Amino acid sequence: MLNRWGVAALPPLGRRGWGMWGAIVLLAAVLRLVGLGLPAEEYFDECYYVPGAYSYLEGTKDENSVHPPLAKIQIALGIAVGKGLQKWGWPLSDEVGWRLTSALSGIGCVALTYFLAYRLGRGSRDLAALSAFLVAIDFMGLAMSRICTLDMVLAWWMLVGVAATWNALEAGIWSSKKAYAWVLVGALAWGIATACKWTGLLGAFMAWVAILFFPSRLTPSALEAQPSPSLELAHQLAKEGGGWWFKGWKRGASVALIMALMVGAVYLLSYIPQFNREGYRWWTVRNIAHAHRVMIDFRYDPQQFTHHYCSQFWAWPTVIRPVWLKFEADRQVVMSIVCFGSIVVWWPGLIYTLEFAWSGWRQKRWVWAFLAWTWLGQWLLWAGSTTGGFIYYVLPGIPLMAIILAWVVWDWQEEGQRWLVGGYLGLITLAFIAYYPFLSFMPASRELFAWLFPPSLTLWR
Image (cartoon, rainbow, N blue to C red; front, side, top):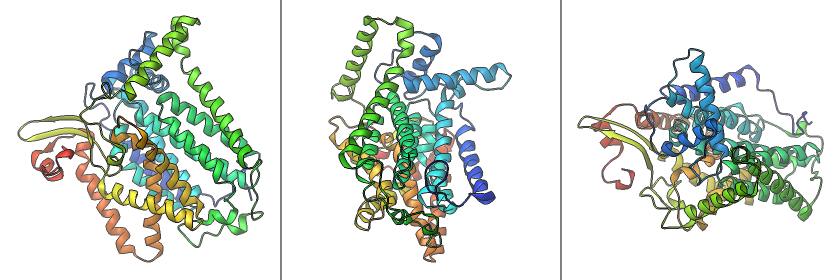
C-alpha cells in the first residue's frame, strides 16, 4: 500500500515516535544554540564568510571568490533574521546572526536523519531515535553547527538530496509517477548544494549512480533489511517485483539530463545578485568566468592550496588530522574549538560502513548497500584530489554513518546483548560530555586538555 507520496506506507510514528523526535531535536537545538555567540569575534574562516554574507545584504562585491554564492546568501538571510530579532528586542549579538544559518542547518540534519532512518528501517522508531541521537552529539556536527562557514549548509542540502534519492528509488519499485517528482526534488537539492560548494557534485554523481543501478535490483522484499524481525512489510505491499518507469540506459540518461538541467539552472540563478549589482551584460559574465578560474586555481594549484591543517582523504574518517578552529590558553585554562570526530563513533562507524557495503551487495540487502555506497562513494572520490583537503569534508556523511552504526547497535539489542548496547552508548555519551568544552569554547583546565589530547598524539594538537 502506497501513501500519497508514492512510497510504501509505514506504521504511524504515534505519540511515542513524535515524542522521541521532539526530545532529540530539542537536545540538538540546545547544544547548538546555547552560547552560539561565543567566541564573540570572527574565528577561523568566518573572516571570509561573514564579510561575504554582508556583501549580499549591502549589495557590494563579494570578495570571497573561491566558492559559489548560494551558501553565503543563506548565511546573509540568517544575519537578516538576527538583525530583525534584535529590532524586536531580542538580546542577540551579531555573532549569533552570523552563525544562525549553520545552527539551523545542523538542527535540520538531526531532524531529517530521524525520518530517513525511520523509512530505511521500515518504521523502526528506535532505530530512528538512535540515529538522530548520534548525529545530535557528533563532535564535528556540533562544532560545525556553531561557526559561520559553508559546510553545515552544504551538509543539510546533501542530506535532503540523499533522502529524496531514496524516495525516488522506493517509488520506482511500484512504477509510481511520484518517482519523477522525487528525482526533481533531489536534483533541486543537489543543485543548491553545488551552488554552495562544488562538493555537492560528488553527492549528485552518487545519487545518479544509485538511480542507475539500484532499481533493477530493488523489490518489495529487498526493503526488508530491517533491525527488527517483527516489523513485517510484506502484508503492506501490493505486489512483488515491479520496476521503474523506464529501464537501463534510458533511465540513466533521463535522470542525468534532469540533474544536469536542474543543477545548472540553480547554479546559474545563484548569481542573480551579481547580475543585479553589475548589470545583465557581457562584462558581468566575464567577471563570473574569472571567478571560476580563481576557484579552479585555488583548489587544484598546490602552491595556492596550502594549509598546515590540510590532509588526505584517508585521514578524515580515521580522525588522524583534526582541525583546531580556535585555541586560547594560559597556564591554567584552555578555551578551544576543535573539529574532529569521536573515535569511539567514527572508527567503528567506518568499519561497519565498509561491512554494510560488502554485505549489502553480497546478501542483496540493498538498503544497507544504498547507505554505505552513498557515503563511501562521496568520500572515495576525494582520492583523486591532488591537493587533499580537510577533515570536515566528510561532514555530509555523518548522518549516513550514524544510521549504519545505529543499525548495528540495534542488532545487538535484538540479539539480547543489552549489556553491550548500554555499555557502548554509555561510552559514547561519556566521551561527548568529556570533550564538549573543547567543541563549544567553554573554559577547561589544562589537566583535562592534556589528558584528552595526549602529547604523544601530536597530530591531534
